[in-house]
Length: 518
Image (tube, rainbow, N blue to C red):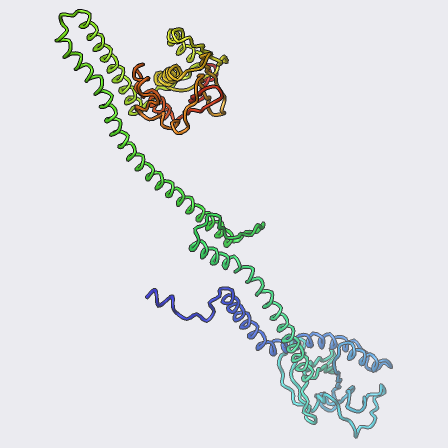
């Protein structure tokens, strides 16, 4: 059913055309009704206007002295001023009807000459001829005035007439307008209305078309924009919105669609980041499992050597019991190997504790005092190896970390510097740089630079560049692994660089606050 509805034929698939056609049909219907009813409407309107003029003309005629010498001129002025025809009748003394024509405008001449004499009576042919006309009365008024339609029996012309008697009842005044003139005026006004309405219709249609185009343009932008959004995966796509003071619902819809699309793209990015994060976690977990397996294998290998030595010397003691010096030498070797095994186990426990401890006890501490305390623990080693140590951190700067864990970092880096130190003047220099969000502590020692391919491997467990020499000195390759694990636990970085005249290890400490700032 849904498919059939989508495939249904549409006469006007464009929204703009649909709205425009609907508006034109409604507007055309209104105009058609107006035009069809306009003829009778305009006729009624003109009749009302002429009735008003005829009433005014009738009132002015009542004020004229018909026996005055200027009566003819005044009557003619009333006709011209109000654009009406006038006939005046007088009651005949012998009858009660108005049969005596006092004033009439004829087709040839005016019969009243102002002295009650008529000229060319045989040619008397009044235009209205009210006395002998058939009259249809429309309205009668309280002052005995009445209005109606009068038809000249001779010419068959129709007149819209108003009959007004004077106060004495001696005269009646007939004011009239030729009905064909009213009809012609109504038709003329109707035709003018049709022309004006047509012009207005065309003008309004053009204006409405452009206005509807302006209104529907955002809809077309929405349709086109959403189509592109559906086909493209580009977070920079936006439907253009008008930057105007008067905002419509369409503009709000565009802003909402843009916001929705932006939210969708952001959600998609987050899902992609999470999927990449999960993939990285899986890879990291796989690496961690491999590292754990390698760690166990390396640990087994490191433990196997001292155990074999202990076993060999323990067995050899049975054969040298009579030789006290040899037995003592064997026992000293066993004691040394046991000490190495103890150091190895302690380092392994430290590394495991750092890697698997979730909570850190953070506190603010003075970095320069912390470094000085660590240096004092190694003073005998420095003296023994003729090493010059310099702590160039003299300012009172505060760090923020778990001090109990962080001591493993500086201790192992100092021990590592002692192991790799060289040159004529053996020197270890500790300095600090401010990196905005943290302090970077550098531990430099003189000596030969390390091969570039080994710099990354230094952080691996049990990695020793000179395995034989370092093992004889009691190093197992776990110190830098402990440094890396401690920094990871603090979400901080560490690294190593070959510098001029030696090697420089570094690690970051988060900035802390002085007691007065807390």
